[in-house]
Amino acid sequence: MIVVTGATGNVGRTLVRALTETGEPVTAVARRITAADVPAGVRAVPADLAAPATLRPALSAADALFLLVAGEDPDAIVAAARDAGVRKVVLLSSQGVGTRPEAYRHPARFEEAVAGSGLDWTVLRSGGLASNALAWAEPIRAHRTAAAPFGDVGLPFVDPDDVAAAAAAVLRQDAHKGRTYVLTGSEPSTPRARAAAIAEAIGEPVRFVEQTREEAHAQMSRFMPAPIVEGTLAILGDPTPDERRVSPDVRTLLGRPAAPFTAWAQRNAAAFR
Image 1 (cartoon, rainbow, N blue to C red):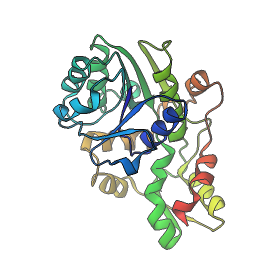
Image 2 (cartoon, helix red, strand yellow):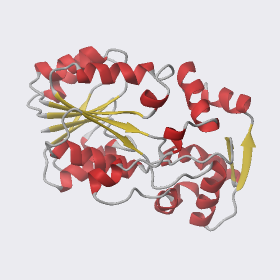
Image 3 (cartoon, one colour):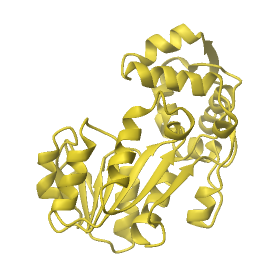
Image 4 (cartoon, rainbow, N blue to C red):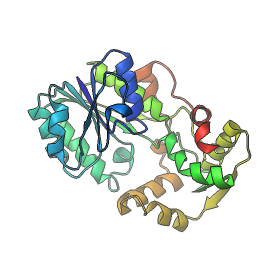
């Protein structure tokens, strides 16, 4: 039995489907989830990583856990998994733990808890997700505009479906114990180019509006903690060589290149129409 936390999210939903299609028994976990949210045969269990005790019913009879960085007590989450008999944890973390450790202490604490758990563990450090562009969905639908800072700075954003496929591979194989992988897309893309890719996907012009750093900071601060806002803006505006680099790890895990942003835009065009 594989437990997938964040099972209704951009990565988790695809991961649940991928595991189910290969015949793996899956328990899908999210704060609000019902049987209607998951494929037939998948067990849906509401639980909250911010309250680790709520995970106990979901972890019953589980062998492996796909874990998001959420909540404030990673040690309690890991202890609940260990007490339930889980033998493997795959953590979806952030590339920023390696490149900006001072700004990414929260996911770093989860990595430390997993590595010190005594369980088999693997860490997947994701770069920026292509699905972050869904923040543009409403303004593109309403006004055909997309706003972002640092319009000509390119980063290799990763398709969440590739993250899910990598997680499925690691969960189903035993060759990844104690490994940390960095997941990126196949090529850098700029915000301006991503807006153009969405325009091509929907067959309509989209005007790109470059925000100031201050405008972007104010917008991000509505839903991100201050250290993550600062770290995110630093990556977007002044990325390090490692943050610009295309990682080989998606190819290593999947035997194929990571998808470009254009493929994500074509697949998700309906969200912007």
